[in-house]
Image (cartoon, rainbow, N blue to C red):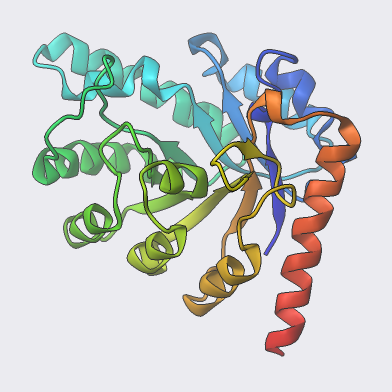
Length: 267
């Protein structure tokens, strides 16, 4: 299992292409590229980012989906068409980067009011999105987010029945914030789990880098092995959590040690 890093870790400090040029110095074995704005959803920009990655493979792309993914659910035909157009451009950038996963947040309320869960409507939108993504050899990987639609393992199980072609991104901090055990998401997502976002937190739920908190990564990695997980683990901290270059380097090294030790114990 490769341990990677998201360019989102430096959002607000470096632009995407600048962050891409530096990921390797932290020991990242792969990258998730966070495309921050509409002008970055372009093949030309993606080529620059891929060049700056200096051989670090991009496994997934995470656009600023809250800017347009909601429009897939709009009542206006024009809004939905614009959302699809933006999505196509994001997919083109992802393809240029060599990514095979598109991380999707999905529908949410701008007021952060809980919306009714609508499995069938979500399935219709995701089916349309996956049809577009398939043309570029990309899978949509729906991420559990506590303020969007995919909030619980139960909802994951419902959507798996409707969307056998879809993939999932598991974000362990979002599971924690939803009051769920991340391992329960592992079991619910099963063979459709394709991407994992990790950070850590202390006993009060305050976020930190992996290895600085109390999360049981040993048990979590065991759970991933139990479902024969073949994807990557992406460190995705907020910028404020990265206290120093050394701290981030040590955090990635910590996850590598955990993964190696667990793999050896299973042999």
